[in-house]
Image (cartoon, rainbow, N blue to C red):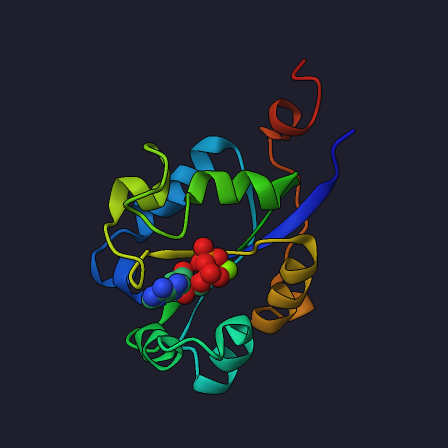
Length: 155
Ligand code: DAT
Ligand code: MG
């Protein structure tokens, strides 16, 4: 039996500027993923230094943080079976020009630094990232009428 997991998604400033927020949220909804948290936030440098800590020695680290502070972002927490892997598949590879056709990055972007979306890459990072952006009382448990199709036997 697959595990129910949670993952963090950030819809980045280029997607906000390019009016792609609805399109991206729609793709997750149509797949049947359950949103349990959603908000707009203007990220500060300290948060981004932590969030992108694995890239701190890269030459593009400063530009990446500046880019992420250009506008507020939309943060989502999604919940479902194997959701970390499912969302990474829907998001596509880091380089949008190499991403599989049909993925968000392939269909909607062309450039690594502005690849429009972030998604947690492991169970461990998802745990840290959700805590970084959401308080416990900003995450919601509720039943959706469609849960039986996505989580159950479908009958
Ligand atoms: P991902 O976002 O697919 O998890 P990552 O964690 O390696 O990829 O990098 C985080 C972000 O940093 C990525 O979405 C865009 C930016 N980035 C990565 N590699 C880059 C590069 N070579 N030049 C510029 N920006 C880069
Ligand atoms: Mg990453």
